[in-house]
Length: 559
Image (cartoon, rainbow, N blue to C red; front, side):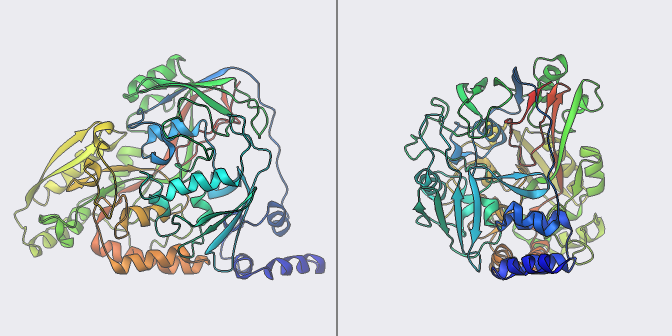
């Protein structure tokens, strides 16, 4: 590094403690180039600054073929109405993501890419973030996007009375009144507590955060094209499908496709047959367990992305039944042969879980040897059952949904716990029925929806670029999606420390504390984290698998 280069780098270090920590950790070889890029984008370092540090160069992409309509299959249909701030299921997420855009987009490798925001800058402790917006962006109504629209969108997202499912991401970080307009193209987010990874919460990983006009009317998303994306929704029929046309005034230029036609499928086999027959071109999300006919098929290409998509098996800690005892919950977890489960359900497309939300894809994951991997141990499981007073077992019903490989996982758990005397009945509902009912979240309770109230269940959870949502929504006291109804002040403190930590070493310190607590309490089993998978015909070009499951088509074409 020559003198001029050293002076430039030192200038970056002097900007503040966040920049200093990033560069010091990088130059100390605590993480590689990819991880530096990821972390630098989190804290809003410009692309030119990152390039200067890495002395890297850009790449070019081939010009796509223009024209044609992409036919997309979505499994399953949306469980509820298409209202972005209420999105809580895969069908709704995929449907909205074709038209909607976010302030930031999460790309491959957990990197953050400017979308409707051009930059994001924290204060010294990451308790306040200033976001600059892209100029000359028009909604599909023709009106210009300004800070007023972003403030209105985020006020709805953090309003506890709006029905927003994004509170799962923002609770404890951002509250009503924390979003203010600085000028027409600048928004300030004043946080409840320091949140080092806050830009991820502003990104497409919080899939409810589609930016909408300030005068948006609830219930009009599918009847009035009014997002900023490359495609505008022109028709929507619940349970049947949706249509989108190219938006010619898109700020990003001219999308290659003329439009998109979506068909909803409740049955994976029907969608697979349609893809192989050429009736559709792309399936937004598939699983090995239900879509095996697509793998190694010469007509099909598989899109994959390493992520943190997983299934949670929450066990209610607040009911007067055997699951109230942590020894019983540990015993159930110890019956699972995780390597065998992963091999059976995913072959090589999944990572083994360790009953915490820290997937191996996260740089902050601790893992062995600091945290030992939980393995099947029937002897210890039986000892724990005896110590809890249930040597002869008990009966219980596991409630879950007919989605992906979940029914097979339910059967595996049923067979596994039988070895320690537990008679487990299975109640497998349609996804619509499983997520039906009110989902109000604390303090008024968890509504009456089956997925938040059954004694033990299995729920599908999408990828997040950082584990914050899993911590705040699923595990922290009063979490809006805390299906175990778990409460631990010690865990809450460790989670808060993790979320606010700027340095990777501090993140690992707090994650180790939190993981240790969760393994002792075992409110939720995390059996595996599987790769995002999609499937398309060989004519689909420029599509990439988004670990979250968003269907991003502005750079996709038919070749």
